[in-house]
Amino acid sequence: MKKQWYLPTPAFSKYVCYPEFLGHYSHFPQHTERRSEGFLGNYNLHLIFDGEGYVFHEGERIPMSRGRGFLYPKSAYQYYGSDPGKPWDVRWVHFSTEIVLPLLEEVDQSRAYLFTFDLEAKLDELFEEMYLLSASYVTRNEPRLSALLYELLVKLLQNSEPLHGSVPHEVRQSIPSAADIIHVECARPWSLESMARLTGYSSYHFLRLFRMVMGKTPNRYLTDCRLTRAKLLLVSTGLSIAQVATQSGFAQSSYFIKVFRKFEGVSPVKYRQAFGS
Image 1 (tube, rainbow, N blue to C red):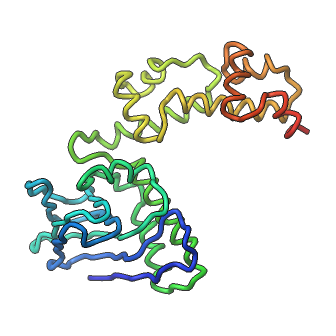
Image 2: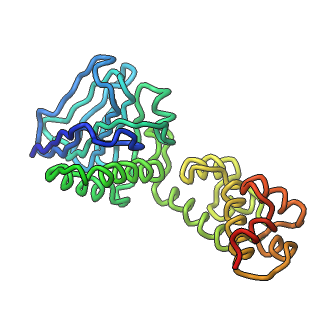
Image 3: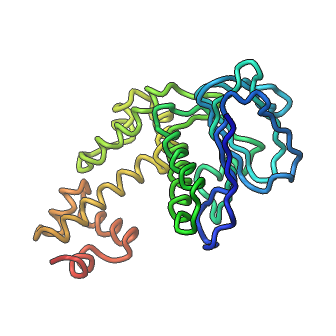
């Protein structure tokens, strides 16, 4: 099977990201590409759901099979292909962006990003919706196509690991679970060590993985959770500023006021005046 769609240049020119050429190949043993540097001026993402194949990267032939993928930056040299005897079931998209996205920052500094991804993350469902919208393209589909691609890239960031040095899926899943606990119990006196104990990682590896999966450090995430709770208390209760600070996890009201002003641009009192009932 070989299905592919070219999309016209979008009518609106400022989408965060937008698919230009996408498709789904299976039982297609002729699938192989070798592109010279500078030939393809957009990003090229492939996710492999079955079958076997390869990517040539830095002089090495690297096997690429179920649960693996690759993402090339713009204008990169590309050499990859499906095994004729066990061809890929692969979903792919060439796309452009208007801004630098988190996943692409690292890719732009490399020749290619090779990774493993979680097959249960339902990335194929995002592709399927993009296929349907592409097959019946009308201009009003453009915002949804852009949104689906953005969701795909964010989910891939959260559910993938570099091919070399990757960790098992069940281990990676402990990071979002720990984040949920921290969010609900943000008033606790958390330290990096106590947050890391939720996952069984050392503090060093927890910090690295949390930043990779959640897009921010554990301490920044904790601060954001505390500020979210504080804003809710400010607008929905008559608690004093000191009480709001305590119930949001800030040990001192003076520190709470300083942090609140830094991230929200106003003092807690002015925030309450502006948004409180």
